[in-house]
Amino acid sequence: MPLLSDELLLEAYHQAVRLQLEREFLYMLRAEIKRRKLSVGEELPA
Image (cartoon, rainbow, N blue to C red; front, side, top):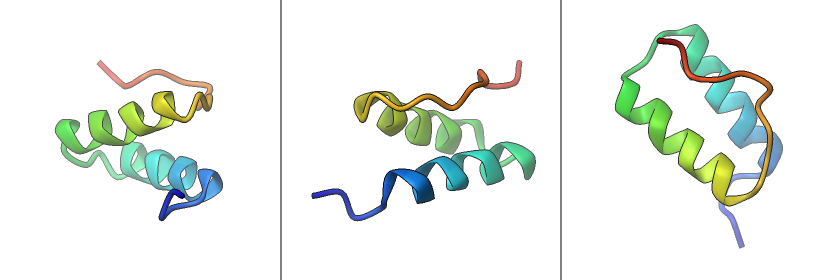
């Protein structure tokens, strides 16, 4: 059972992108999103 709901995971990812947090953190969130087969609707910024 995930400790973070899908909704909160996606919200955390979008906030992390918006706040330009560490790229490694973004990759970790993105990996979990992919593991759960969710869609964020955007790719990581270059």
